[in-house]
Amino acid sequence: MKDQLNVALIGTKFMGRAHSNAWLNVGKFFFTPPLPMMHTVAGRNPNDLEEFAERWGWEHHTTDWLAAVEDPRIDLVDIATPNHIHAEQAIAALEAGKHVVCEKPLAGTLSDAEAMTHAAEKADGQTFVWYNYRRVPAVALAHRIVQSGALGRLYHVRAAYLQSWGGPETPLVWRFQADIAGSGAHGDLQAHIIDAVRFVTGEEIVSVEGAIEHTFIEQRALIGGTAGAEIAGTGAGTDAGMGQSTVDDAVLFLGRMAGGALASFEATRLATGYHNANRFEIHGEDGAIRFDFERMNELGYYDARGEGATAGWTVIDVTRGGDGHPYAEAWWPDSHGLGYEHSFVNQAADIVSMIGGRSPVVPMPDFKDALRTQRVLEAAIVSARERMPVSIDHDDSGGSS
Ligand SMILES: NC(=O)c1ccc[n+]([C@@H]2O[C@H](COP(=O)([O-])OP(=O)(O)OC[C@H]3O[C@@H](n4cnc5c(N)ncnc54)[C@H](O)[C@@H]3O)[C@@H](O)[C@H]2O)c1
Image (cartoon, rainbow, N blue to C red):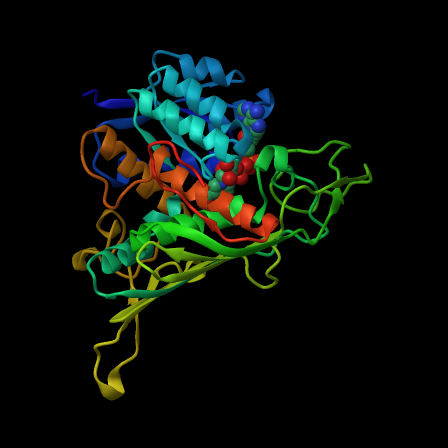
């Protein structure tokens, strides 16, 4: 095994920064080898790119992502670009013999996700998907608690991902264009909670019983006269005219888990007052858990076997390495909380471990795993549009919803 891992990153904005921070810090907090080397960053704007490479410590930069992917010195390709191009970039990297870590959702469409999974099956490289919330310590602990059987038979799963940045003032960035994003809040936010529920329960979502999707804001300001400018946020004042949003602003659906629990999911960019409320609650015969990313260092646990007047919810401060809390040992003393960026560093650590032949702290989604999340996304949209229940075939020998 090589003791270094040369990384090529594609994309330099929101996730480009989050991933750069992860590659920069992982070797300082976690055991490696192989030690990730920030070899090449690929982006589109040569001026921004040079500044980005210098700021984050990327050794080389290029505007030709394919050249970076095919460079024989590169071992791992990290994809942090919009959803429509994941398939082309990931398949090129797999065919070039690289390990690939791709942002979520795996792709904008189910067919792209299937093509990527197919390519991964034929390739030598390992695949990983940045469902980073699995590596928030409280979510990883929730996984361990539920997998230990502490909740008993599961009855209810309730998941919501609530943000509020997508009002009429937000221009027509790529996230509002179906040909680039695939879907709106659904692929952007719902994908995360579908993955989290699958991860924590260890069960597949086997049907969507009903769903609704809605686009509240149909027209949005064009940026500089074109759609698809790179800004991710709001406030691009423009008089360049208006364009059509082609994605959902919100999707809600009901489903069934393989073990029989009933599940509800809600994803929206218009939940006024919530900014990143990525939440789930799971109720079983013997107990319950609840998580809200806006209080990410805490996990709620209810032991239904507790006695009388003292029975109640326990708020676990998931920062205590000495008590075996996942990832905590690598970081700070007890109750010195972690933030959003640590989930990416934790995931980078597990990717490096797996490439080095060691086990991740908690299970890692590969392309095949992320395809199952993509099937649920697709089933919910079919259910909403056709107004009918949709069962989901997770037979990995080729079936889809
Ligand atoms: N894991 C998470 O928590 C999380 C959070 C946000 C976004 N994401 C995902 O990350 C991906 C990127 O989102 P973002 O918020 O960083 O977007 P962004 O708009 O901030 O950045 C996108 C980057 O991709 C580059 N790019 C766009 N089209 C390209 C092309 N055709 N070829 C090469 N580069 C191209 C842009 O130049 C830019 O650098 C998406 O798949 C998104 O769903 C994940």
